[in-house]
Image (cartoon, rainbow, N blue to C red; front, side, top):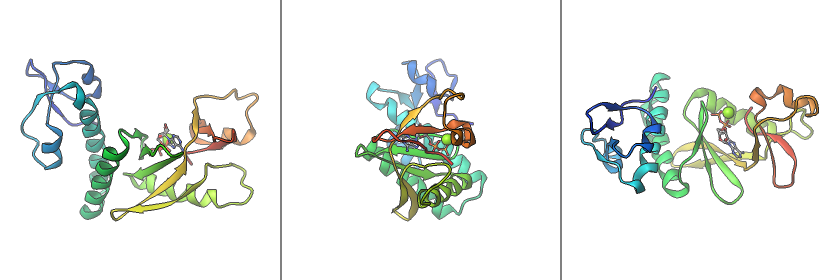
Length: 192
Ligand SMILES: Nc1ncnc2c1ncn2[C@@H]1O[C@H](COP(=O)(O)OP(=O)(O)O)[C@@H](O)[C@H]1O
Ligand SMILES: [Mg+2]
């Protein structure tokens, strides 16, 4: 559900982030996009490819918040925070409900852009406070910046797929088996 982000040199519209492979792609200059001017476009210089990708991410988050009719002010605060974190930490990983930034000091910041993401953030903080949970979860606490609540979670090494015959029983109860190893080598869930 990406919006048009620019025009190719042949005049066709550019929708997908795969376009970054094509040097002919044109895009809205990042600073103009942020300033709310989306009219002009120009060739993408190599060193701005991440900006194009981030612009797409911001578009998706904006669409998601608008479709849920988030209060305009909170949506703006969330977008401002996403931009600040992108400038600080680089491109986030993006799930269906949250953008996740690696801070580089063993933690990730999980910013919700849907109500489901807000719910997941709350669930994960709550689960991380349980003494002896059936499903162990990565250490998680609340963070707050620029008017937005988000979570600060211990970074894990994501495991793509475990052998269902030998994996601990609880992994079968984690949506899509979203688990990973902590730096101490403990298997935990990171998305509840
Ligand atoms: N604790 C973590 N450590 C490392 N990567 C993470 C962590 N949490 C999330 N991620 C990355 O961010 C992506 C999106 O996070 P996720 O929790 O799955 O959000 P969503 O609720 O949007 O699915 C994940 O697929 C994963 O690649
Ligand atoms: Mg997920």
